[in-house]
Image 1 (cartoon, rainbow, N blue to C red):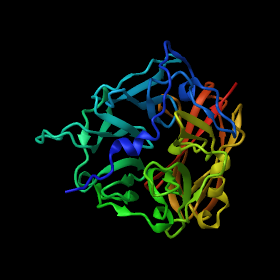
Image 2: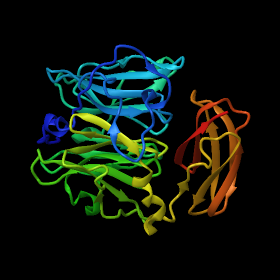
Image 3: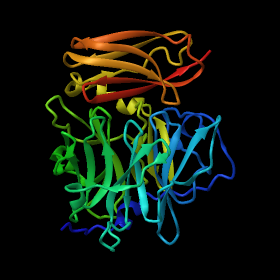
Image 4: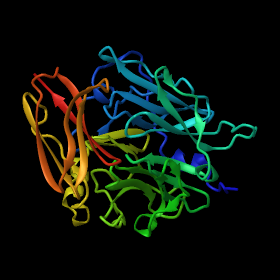
Length: 386
């Protein structure tokens, strides 16, 4: 039986973020219609989020959002909004959510929503925290399902999912929480394995965010063993042999004298969202993630670069790098998740490749291009303007 020595209120209380609920619809555009940030942290959607909001997560296009709303009596519920008809709807309760749910997390394809919940697991009548998930269906979302063993047997603080389905978990079975991986093998999740000391050498590392291709991991950790210690955001890169570089704190652009905790990075690797103090902040992530191209340990990893030029008015180029020969597909999707063009569907040799794409026939708007190599998926956003 798992031992839960860390109270959830302590774990997540340091990053509950307050803001006012919107009284009307938001303007259209990705990420609640907010003006996209630059290289300096700025508050995200100030005054537009539900009261006592924490832990945002977005679909790959940034056009659907899920969050946790906390109430003064310490209950919590999942909230959602999405862009429809050129506007964002007001936040509303997720169809299946009850006042025991928190910490939503969308998989890279946006089709599975993980969350933590205290709802009882039948036939037990007891309110015990477990990791649950719901699948996207034609009518919205399926009824939630609790994760079975071996995940069920641990106290899960947080979850993040790679493109191949591997789960990166914050586990707090003891007073010394750490980050683990549960690999998906033949459709079955394996017993979680603790990541190396290059990551878990820090104090109470948790709330990891894993890149879709597993090339980097971000997480927050405490400055001292004190559970109420200030927390900072760290990054580690995966080496070609699947080991990890020693995690280092992000610079003063992200980490300040306040507590910072990681929320997520947009699926195109363009924006980082964090909790700082009592608010959610965001900024351009390109300077933070530049190391994924520059570090020798990751030069041989699969890479998908930002198209250039972007925004696109006619022809743009998309560059990708393969560490070894592989069957490659490259597709363009619009904001409705409709496939509007396949650029590649063939075996390619190892090395760097460039594909030209003529966007003249596409309506103006936000698109993504998705590279699939074996079971790994990489996604980046492309803007088309006329």
